[in-house]
Image (cartoon, rainbow, N blue to C red; front, side):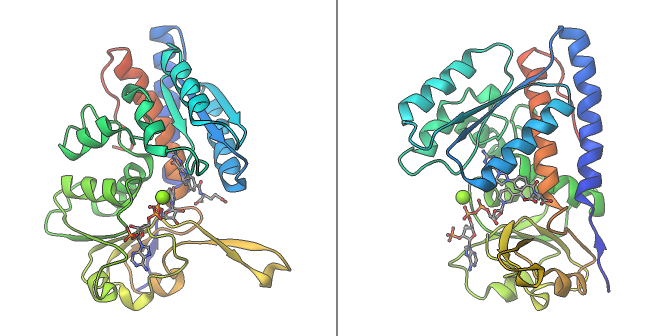
Length: 302
Ligand SMILES: NC(=O)C1=CN([C@@H]2O[C@H](COP(=O)(O)OP(=O)(O)OC[C@H]3O[C@@H](n4cnc5c(N)ncnc54)[C@H](OP(=O)(O)O)[C@@H]3O)[C@@H](O)[C@H]2O)C=CC1
Ligand SMILES: Nc1nc(=O)c2c([nH]1)NC[C@@H]1CN(c3ccc(C(=O)N[C@@H](CCC(=O)O)C(=O)O)cc3)C=[N+]21
Ligand SMILES: [Mg+2]
């Protein structure tokens, strides 16, 4: 079998078109656009690229968009003061503090300080709890997991009843929330991690295999059950001497060519889950704006 390539760029463009239509209607009703504030502490080059891309998409969607760039030496108190300021700004509906944060800042303290109604990453304990209890009418759901689910639904439809989903990775920002969403779609879910025994054999049982590990090409072709749907969340920059000295390229956590020969559908890296993450950030900002204004919750990628 040669897998169907799941086109994350096209799926993201479709979500962003829905976002734009919602923004126009919101602005017409409320007399203001949704607002997104992105906070970057330090000068990590990958984070700078992501934050720039988020700002560009926010402007394309018609948001009020602001970016706060703070030096790597910023104190936790100063960062908390900025969070308090954007929390109090009525024109800001969404707040994202880019991770990772410098080592002297406690990320959990900062994420918990964000107003849960503006927590468009879905990382605040209130939103984590709402997701875990199935209250998806009120929760803001993390972007990468929500985007991954739209890609899975594009292949398998809304119900995963009878399917075994294996999620490799148990982080709070990717692995655990993806597992919650798969469970809500009636999949039978296994969460694997660095202490899992015989990971390859476990992965071979998966009808839906999600890799969110951060290890380049760890999942090999013979870990994939024939006909499985493979979602590769990993973003790894590795040396690419074939492109010239000092050049790099992006690969996922899945050995793409090997897995594509076995799977029925697979996300590429780049062009798979990554673009959906940014699109769902915009969707979450529109959702937060609607909920904050007492309007009906819009649904994206339905
Ligand atoms: N496409 C996108 O939009 C996004 C992509 N990413 C990418 O996804 C990947 C994962 O991110 P994130 O969840 O933040 O990463 P973390 O480092 O927070 O978590 C990695 C997880 O993988 C597990 N793991 C590590 N090594 C192994 C191994 N050898 N075998 C099995 N499990 C292992 C860890 O296990 P343990 O818990 O035991 O340590 C941990 O649960 C990264 O490549 C990241 O860049 C992240 C966010 C968005
Ligand atoms: N508070 C917070 N929220 C996040 O959502 C968050 C974060 N911090 N820190 C870092 C991770 C990573 N992440 C990505 C977003 C887009 C792409 C993306 O657009 N990827 C493109 C390629 C980009 C490139 O070429 O480098 C693609 O896969 O096609 C990737 C990764 C969001 N994250
Ligand atoms: Mg992490």
